[in-house]
Image (cartoon, rainbow, N blue to C red; front, side, top):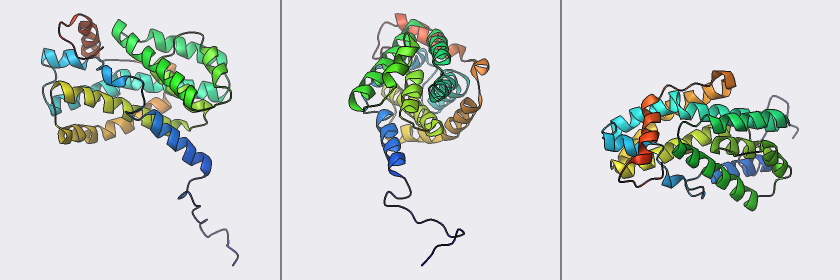
Length: 245
């Protein structure tokens, strides 16, 4: 029987996804999984000092701290850098990519956070490059001509593999928040259920932050999380530490 144009196309054997869409989702889920070995578990982004200082004491205070970091601090800024790097690679603009990489590296507020984001960025690129063949990725990395921070690494690798920007953004912010919660759960400590409640409560903040980051340019970069920035600085001299930042 002939199918008219008004009838919906049947789902293919991949459950509505093409083979390339399925592969892109598979890679994105792998790269942003807690099991992907970039060393994220060893960093707390200053949360360790905030717990010792009494700023974070329970699930509610952790949620509030992370919501602010995400919407008004490093979460939003990292999202902007990811988006801009992805777009520069997609339009083959090496000069713009180099400027974005340089600005992102300079935007980090402390030595430990610099170590955190550059180490993860380097590990992310090297492991993704070793496990998946991608034509043109080496040239893109060379074009950056310097340290590549984690959000820029995710943006450029995702673009090189033709993974759409929007899911890459949401996956990155989800992974970022999940790692923050994992650090908080070990430090406060929190149980698994409370940790998932915090993650659920931050869902609308992740969604709104991703939307803002996708709609923003480099001129919109801004941070107002002074206490979190101080936490990352104070952590450098904290006497007892479980985390590297």
